[in-house]
Structures are given as C-alpha cells and as structure tokens.
Image (cartoon, rainbow, N blue to C red; front, side, top):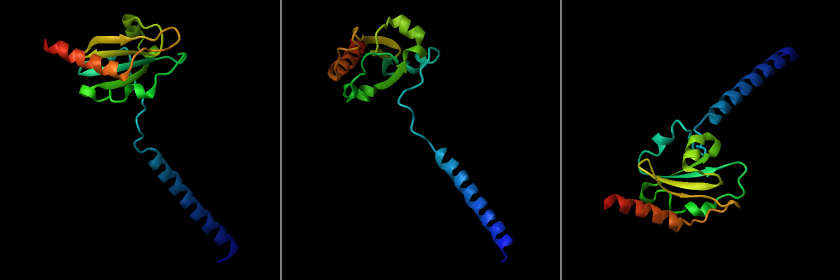
Length: 147
C-alpha cells in the first residue's frame, strides 16, 4: 500500500468509527430518561389530575423564602394511594387564585377532586405542618366519607 491509499483507508476507518460513535451516542441519549420530579400541571389539566384518590399538591415559586423539608413527605406518598405533585404557581394561576394562596411554598390536599385541606406558608415561608399532620388529614378525609 502506498501512502495515499493508507490515508484514504485511515480516513474511511475514522469516518466509520465517528459515525458509529455519533449514532450510538444518540441511541444511548434517547433512552428513557427519568421523569422530572415536577409534574407538568396546568390550569387546563388540573381537575383531571386531582379527580381520583388523594392528591397532595406542593405549590412553589422561584422567589419563595424557604424550601419544604424533603422528609415532610416521607410515608405520605402512597399512604392510602396518595399521589404528590409539585407545581410552580405560574402554571396554575386560576387554581392559586381560587385557593387564595399568596405565600410559597404551600400545600393543598384534594380527595376525589374536592379540596380537603390547605397549609399555607407564613410571611417567612414556613409551613407549619408535619408528615403526621398530613397523614391525619388523609385519614380524616377517609373517615368523613364513611359517615
């Protein structure tokens, strides 16, 4: 093989490896990615999302003073089938206005589409609730349906 044939052969080999890398890289990148923890709720689909079972909504804002403790929802997700969504207040302006949430973060509990309880943050962004309070509210809502 002369020098020009080696260069052409090397270029072809490089192109094959490059194309393989790019195509396989896109296949790997396109695999199922984990869902974002923030569910995309809007004013349009809000009623549909809260229609069945227990739904706990965390209303947040980019300018909120404090974040909710991650341990607050330990044991609540899945308790009596409870589902937890986190939503930015700007995505559900009509809902926020109807529930009268002004401070963030705030939490609302819905059961079968009806509002059961709301825990609103104070002016410092502190929500005075524990996971026991959340479970108790779910249990009380169930007991209310029986009697």
